[in-house]
Amino acid sequence: MERTLVLVKPDGVQRGLIGQILGRLEARGLKIVALRALQMDQALARRHYSVHEGKPFFQGLVDFITSGPLVAAVFEGPNAVEVVRNTMGPTDPAKAAPGTVRGDLALTIGRNLIHGSDSPDNAAKEIALFFAEGEILSYQRATEGWIIEP
Ligand code: DAT
Ligand code: MG
Image (cartoon, rainbow, N blue to C red; front, side):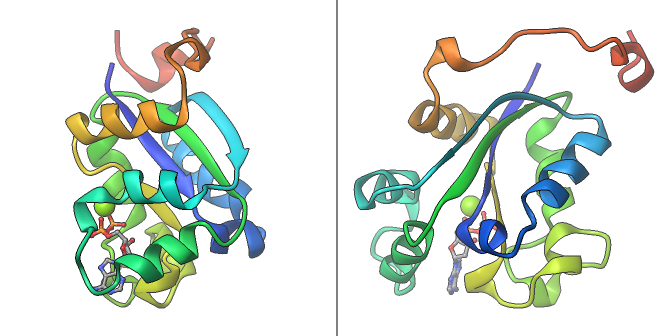
């Protein structure tokens, strides 16, 4: 089953939106298989956002993501990467449709509340930055057959 990394960024923690953001993904039917709160240091932030190194917004992004605690979660489900991306909305909240996390709860690109991996390959790399393999749970929910047809 596909997995993806989700971060509730420091703005989401400060605004008291952890439950609402994770809850939307949980209500969608995706399964939380790993969860922790942490504050990223500069080195982890640079690795996590290494594809953006050299871009004008890179240092500001690293400073923001390290500015306070965040919540990291691994969500699992069919097409988890695409489902999370669609539930997040596009990078710029001004372009995000109502109904999406960014479209409902955010206004500007530098405070867009949530990270979600953009491909299964990147998801695997990003998950490994935050969780050891042994920290990722494998379990069945009693509701599984009501969410995903067997
Ligand atoms: P996403 O978070 O939707 O995957 P991304 O990977 O392109 O977007 O960029 C990572 C983060 O960097 C994004 O959430 C906010 C910031 N960012 C991206 N483009 C930016 C820009 N043009 N100006 C300022 N910040 C930007
Ligand atoms: Mg991205």
